[in-house]
Figure 1: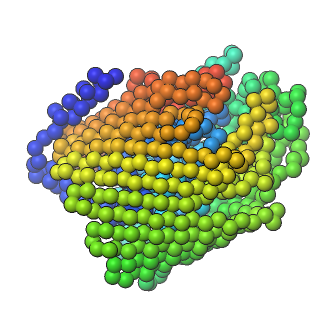
Figure 2 (figure 1 turned 90 degrees about the vertical axis):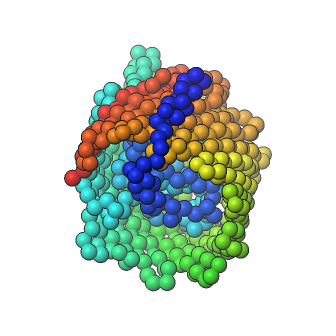
Figure 3 (figure 1 turned 90 degrees about the horizontal axis):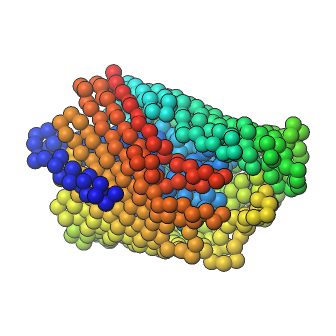
Length: 624
């Protein structure tokens, strides 16, 4: 494996070429990337993935990007869904991830983890991505998150075209995507449709075939008037086999999710903005099991069939304003959010079963402000605060707060960033109100989190070096207390112990020229116990040879032992991609994923499951 890595690095040197008129033009185009204008170092530890990088990586879904993030590993759940695991944590840990499309936060109220629903989301209509880790600015609004992903849609004034892309792969998956962007005077619109038949490797357990195959549809529409308003509409529908399911010997079943939202942004003079959002999400599980499905509050013999449907309605209103004066910028905002949780069906062995569930409604009132002060052009101080008031339908209320301070300084070739953040983690509906396979805890309280982090960036000619470290600790942490005798009696509780960990990362990026670059990154986390990889590394090579773009990616994840005591080997995920530009309108693409079939795996019911299957994809794209 080390020899192979060295070969990739040497290959990138061979592709490096002297600057020419063509590469100078590409540099000019790259300088126009919108992230260079929106990137805010004061908002946190940021990673920006441009449209050019997304294209060369052939990142067709959000998971294709997430698997490259430091401190995180993609995992598979028992019901066939995917999730993101922070270093050392189990799948049952609370992961405070927020995903935005422009200024709209995607709904995650039902499952409490937005990446379960949106990990397979198509990116064909996305222009670039900003990812913030280890806490983020309060200016993003909504409930706090330690990992924030902002997806920015393509700009019709830059695109002004219609593109169609179709893919097939060696496992029989088929994808059809289309995006159209048009401008009419001061009006513009962007439309995207994404249809997928997703096939994955099947596994056999006790004579039963475990499948997570499914189909997914996605729609996005945006209509805008320049400097006046944006109207956005999004919808997804996904249905797939239940894989191992919730029971002991699954025979049949599926998971079906639907989500629709609308988001309206109105822009006023003097940097004033108002946003209104409404979303509806529906989640259905059907599971048949030959031995039985352990359910909370029910003793043996276990149920052999479960049919349950839940839903969430979310409404929010937000007003934000910026006050800019010389070297000072003050941002203020207020938001109201109403979440309403519904349980349409809970049918056990064909009988509609009544259960005493937890609170089904939650109102959140939020006030937040951030002040950015430039001591001079090279030194900036940020101070922010946020107060959130929660009240649920059981008349239980709490007041939470966020305090954050940061410093960004530029010293010739060095950039230094330092952040301190006191935040919180509020329990989810799945922890307090409803769960099909463990007990809920309506008395669960929020956890208090303190995070300290720093980052040093050194730029020397065409090479950028980065190094960062930090620590996080949580009081009253929300943990999953597993009942090994009867898993259905497991429950989320507040821990009496302080939950803390430390971390560091280091990276280097070298550009031979605009077409040929190499990125290398390593990271490690330090905590008392590890239920997922504690350390990892990545190598990314971007090369262009004539009309062919070439991409190599190698991801390493360390060995670990699960919460159930299962040892998992270290993983190496090597992927390769090539794009041939047939002409200005047509591109042919080839991508091979997990070529050595050694990516990090997830043990499920005695089977080691790879989230990233070994497969070959062929894609054709045409622009009208």
